[in-house]
Image 1 (cartoon, rainbow, N blue to C red):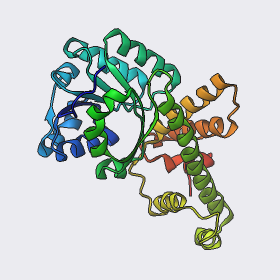
Image 2 (cartoon, rainbow, N blue to C red):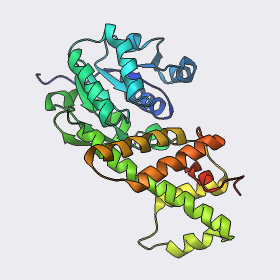
Image 3 (spheres, helix red, strand yellow):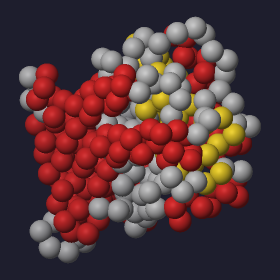
Image 4 (tube, one colour):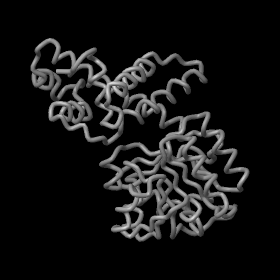
Amino acid sequence: MTEQLPATSVAVLGTGIMGSGMARNLARSGLDVRAWNRTRSKAEPLGQDGVRVTDTPAEAVDGADVVLTILYDGAAALEAMRQAAPALRPGVVWAQATTAGLEAMESLAAFAHEKDLVLIDSPVLGTKQPAESGQLLVLAAGPHPARPVVWPVFDAIGSRTVWVGDSAEGAAATRLKLVLNSWVLNITHATAEAVALAKGLGVDFQGFLDGVEGGPLDNGYMRVKSGQLFRGDLEPSFATKTAEKDARLIVEAGERAGVRLDLAAAGQERFRRAIEAGHGDEDMVASYFASFDGEAP
């Protein structure tokens, strides 16, 4: 593949919590942006930001330099690309940002090979606010000649791009994303459990915050998540049901590698219980509710 010019147009497939913010920043950067979402009404507000909302994935990708997929899971990404297939040009660059897991990435890579697409494994680290402000961390693995093509895309959605491989085939970026997510999810659970224990023991959580303040046990993310619980602000920056899916992918990746991940497995179970209690569409710190058999205090 010869080196290509930077992209001027991009198709965004998936405009949920993450994809909508990404699409807006792509449009603000001056790119021609087309977007598709399974539920079109959720994508419609993007029209006010200069994004052209389409009825089908094929309409979105028609003539695009880069196709960006940011959907719930690998199966959803593959289905969207299959629907887009009639309009996909051979050689188009596919930036696959969905947290898909290792098994699904094999299927996505096979589809890219079948359709002669240039696949870049490019999951992102961040939640709603970084997506909206263009401050995501992009983890990427893909061939060097394709990198100039996606540069304006990654520059618009992220504050930094870390290239970890020259091919998407080995899912190097996805592997790193799973490791990073394992840490984020565990901190979330630890925060939720500490708040729950404080509630159960009648302890003022401010005492906990004062106790760790300024020391090596302090953590800004913990403070943000515990603050959400005390304010009762469970608007999702990352939904519990999506976190449960990511936890499952982490456990599966560990099993493939012969690594036992007890905390990840227990965390997946906490998310499952929170979902069963009706908190699946709330922020993942709703793991807190999994600590109580009845109504949470």
